[in-house]
Image (cartoon, rainbow, N blue to C red):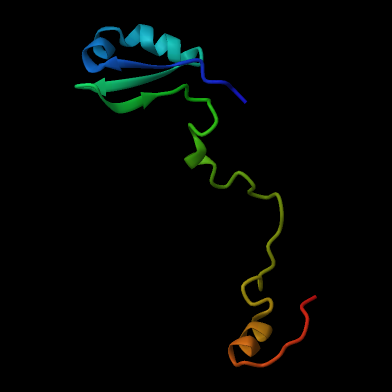
Amino acid sequence: MSQKISDEVVNVHEAKTHLSRLLDRVSKGETIVIAKSGKPIAKVVPFDTPGANEQQRLGFLDGAFDIPDDFDSIGSDEIDALFQGEDVGPTQ
């Protein structure tokens, strides 16, 4: 797991003026917070840090296992019986 080196806060003007330098530091693992009038508005983090691309992990287990065609009906009789107030006994 990568470790955050810093959480430096820079204002918008400084970020615009020194964008290349700030991005170089971010590429080396630093985190930069950009603020407007002293209020943080954005965080620049390295792209490959944990969490940076979490939303794009959909489908990462594609093909790793098979789901039966009737997976959504497995146990439906027991569930129906429970809704009807019937005792279905211990589950296996």
